[in-house]
Length: 67
Image (cartoon, one colour):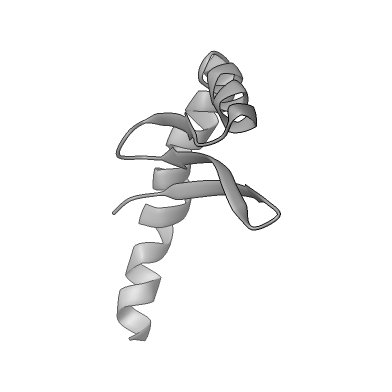
């Protein structure tokens, strides 16, 4: 299971967090600056990493039993 959080502006993805990578990655100049700032903020980075357990793993059983 992988948690992905993407940020878009005008239909263009500029930053993405992937739980398999474990950090934010920027795709535009603005996104690279955001990713660097967010990766250097321990509380913001740990919040993003915790989303896999808090959101994905919490809901996976519900999704599989409803199918």
